[in-house]
Length: 506
Image 1 (cartoon, rainbow, N blue to C red):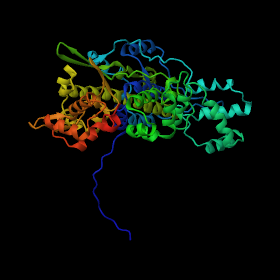
Image 2: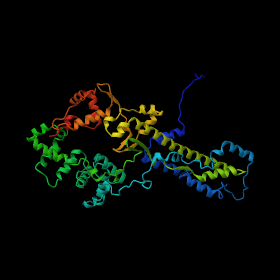
Image 3: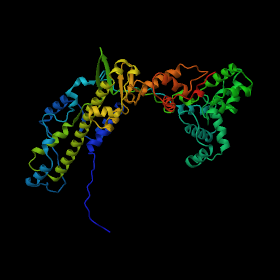
Image 4: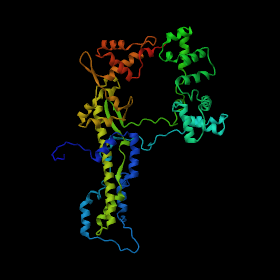
């Protein structure tokens, strides 16, 4: 049954400008330039430039201001409307917002405090990328060396295209057979496919085309140019006892092959020298060079005084197009305004609004990033002066949010994918955030300090008798850190350190 009732709800809706700012905040510097280029391409009212350039353009265009013309149709009389009706449009569109002879629209943050923008080299704006053939192209160049007909070459090229970045064939042969039939109209069977794959496995680098880690290691062991006396046993271990080898059950392997620990050690060295990812030895499938991390902030230590500057790429020079402003000026001076002129000026208004919102978003991003990083710098002052992890204070997002007055989600967006360049390296902002734990004396210390001690203990352990998680817990407790064994195991996993048994070496 339908009924009427009053209901009160509390809703919070984000404006388009707020959504745009949130998206801008989480973009790292390396992607900001591309985002700006995309906006300039889609919005003709936005352009790069400084206030001085705009002033010169304004002066040069005063006498030749462009007019918004109405397309003329042959045989039709020009359309004219009463001035009274045009005044309604003027009420809807406040021209004073868009027509400003004082160069409104220049990015104010570029002139407010130039010292806060660091630009070591304005001309060096691009990151060079080395041109080279990709991993797959390198393999394809070797297909011509095989004794294959044109059809078999197509199968070989398809197999090469199915390899992943590590050089492995992860797909099942029957699935590849189906692909060849449906996509390339090439009929084959699994036996022929495996025969061609076996020839690809003879390509360089050794181990390419393997379907598992064991097969990859075997391909490399069997292709050794100078096999040692231990190579044959290494092949048998990988073929039949790889599981025991991976789990480091060395005593069982010694009993199976009736060898001592010294001989087993040399066999293990023979295997561990192999490359488990042959595709990476050629730089991966993309053939692209690793791009250098571009810091968002530059932090310098000037005789004990920390000075923070924002990378100049975070503060690009943007403005509202002077040409679009002249359109507004021309419309304002016109006594009679046609329908097409009004439609054109509404389009201009929309683009100018969008350009202003984008410039404001860049400015808000600039201010928010500086505010957040300045707060982090003051909070972690001792660490940033020394670089010693022992001085890294426990800090969570809420600590910075409370000090800045920003929302926790805003601080999170600023910290995500951002880096600061310091005297002791370029550091991710996420690195400064860590939880705390109490010592016996009641002092709050960062969990990073505990992880550093844990890493140092494992690094200094005897590899033939690695320290167990229980013993690591006891050592930390003796040093005054109240920590449980499961917490030690969690920190060890976060440091990508395996359990004691897998750290054992002969």
